Image 1 (cartoon, rainbow, N blue to C red):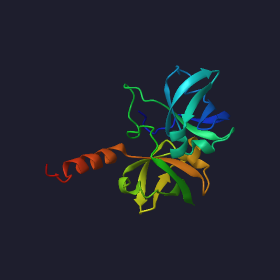
Image 2 (cartoon, rainbow, N blue to C red):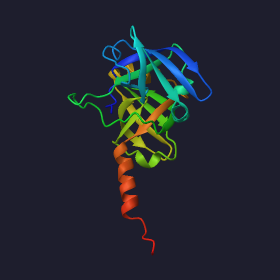
Image 3 (cartoon, rainbow, N blue to C red):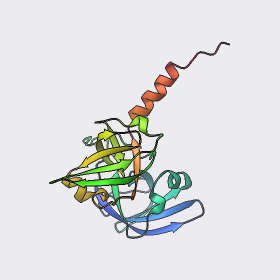
Image 4 (tube, one colour):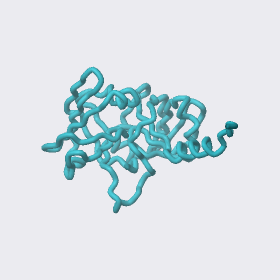
Amino acid sequence: MFTGIVEELGTVAALETGTDSARLTIRGPLVTSDAEHGASIAVNGVCLTVVTHDDGEFTVDVMAETLARSSLGALQPGDRVNLERAMAASSRFGGHVVQGHVDGTGTIAARSPGERWEVVEVSLPADLSPYVVEKGSITVDGVSLTVVDVTDDRFTVSLIPTTLELTTLGTKGVGDPVNLEVDVLAKYVERLLATRFAPVVPS
């Protein structure tokens, strides 16, 4: 589990692609400082498993399902990525419950700079729209953010200077893809309600 508080801006060092998978090598000295084989690290919000690690770099395997649901397949060597280690049970909970299971992708639709912050508008896939609410939580490229407002196909977030400086969201341009993970609590509520109020079929 993660919190959506990015620890480090990493860099894609190498990319090997196969027919239905990819292997990424990512430079991230901070997140690899205590890494072990099998550890979980979120890369742009996607929970991935460390295969190898050495000298500030780690490798991860990305399967077809992850490539299809996220923007990781579009990464190239030299690209910056948001990195976060799995949360320790003794840590402060700074963001919200983030599983690292990306629900889909959106694109940056608009950016509106303010005096010390920036309002960013992101397209919202129709199947994710019911789970996004005003002032609720959403994860964008691994960053825990509060929704400012939402329509059927878009939502906006406000980025403070720290987020602009320390995450990839500070440099994403209009049209760039971003990974989206909606609040898992909303999905559980939907499932529970659907089960509880499902019509009874006569036997």
